[in-house]
Image (cartoon, rainbow, N blue to C red; front, side, top):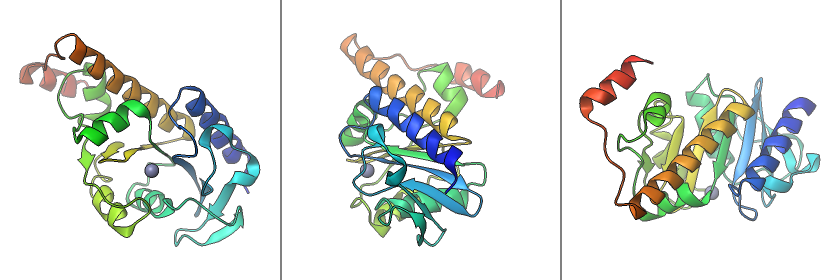
Length: 205
Ligand SMILES: [Zn+2]
């Protein structure tokens, strides 16, 4: 087992728990470790992880070492790493504000925040499928090549980053953004940026 990666997952899992992004035993976190993946186990609470809650699996999903019961969403993580060499860590969570959008069937693709447009472009919404199913992998993975954040309908969100810290920071950014959009609704709704302004933001990338 790669101790520093395990420690990072425990550290940022705890932070995600403190922020309220990982209620109960929902969600799972992983990190790429050369040709293997370190992933939280089935039924573990991401905010209260112990080293024994981590499994090392290969890209076929076989357990190499550690906890014998890796997350049932391991296939989703494996597919994201397969498609994206630049992604080395993944958070899948049911954080309340992003999951509110996913539950309402609303993507976060409207152009409102310069920071979100700059960082992510759009945040798409993948169709619903049973958690842990091949169908879920198929419906969500069609967005992997172009997106670091994907809402999963009636379910939650998946976020990929270069490192565990970067994936966490992206999750933090989009969860707080979702909260802002909901607050703006109370105030009459967020204003959409003009296309011209959106293009100027894209030109900064
Ligand atoms: Zn889930």
